[in-house]
Length: 486
Image (cartoon, rainbow, N blue to C red; front, side):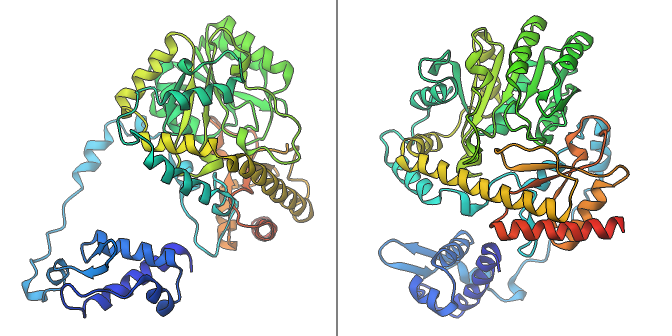
């Protein structure tokens, strides 16, 4: 049983127990409940929080947990209860929303699929975040506790973000003594928020925006939500095809190109040194911005060669708008990231964020500062790199054993593999068959802005809880593949 269902089950049992208690009666201690119900202390704490949120119990520090008077009202006889409300008629919304339905389909379904938690008996080779066992929960708990005690931790922060955190991001991205300073950084609520701010700020509705093909569906969704016209530029093993990028700029007069130069999602490609210089030259000639989504830099594997510098570190002219996030390597809930820009572009980014959300909550920013300053953060990143290496190694070996020929070139970094399926294979049907076999994978079609040149699957080995389950997930995928193809 997973943690969420354990909490719900215990909360229901405790609800029935509390019904027999008189008002003001003290509940058994957490230790007694752990022993009685054979659950973890965390499960007891969360179940109690559920009952407290419902107003059924109240916690008194140093005294215990007590039944409240509110419980009597919730358990009154059915005769005293008001009649059930009439079901509302929501059919009018179909008409109201239909006028611009074609323009409002932003393609969020792939994002929702990667955020959904799979059933406990399904192996997750789909998720976009490392498994909880790979994340630094103790470091985060300590960072949050220390952050809450910092002087002014609950004061309103500067709109751009805490100066210390902006300085840390500037050094992390541009290097010590590099082209970026704290004044070039805007703290954002994670990477997806940074993407939204960048695209909404730097291109007007209806304008073309160049994207890699294939690319992360979140980029496509943001562009469509902003009313931009997406123009795909193909990627190969060395990153974006710069000859086609130059042609796309000439044909469309676009002023924006969005790319992932490091461990590109979904192909895993790393932009080659020659093409790095070409991308900057082509964009500068076109008078365009390059939005550099550096989402995977903290997911480098233990056996990876030295990483190339961000494009922003070699850009004195403000062509690159760089985004970086702590979320992938720390926790899905630590939604703290950064945008860097030079000149008037930063003012535009700041204005968009203020209109959208004012600022990132100061306690989160303080916690991020505590986290990156902790010596355990560097140790965590090394451990994470080793674990990702091991999961990749096992997953690659399993693919070569179970489904030879589907896996192309891959790099030691990131968290995913890109499989090319034989022509005529329906990747969505294979995804459905895989789910029936007990493994969750991602179809390739949503990664393309136009018709895909071939069917693909994306496998994420970071979301799986162990190397054994990674291998078992590939085995189940093979069974699904054989079922579909005969």
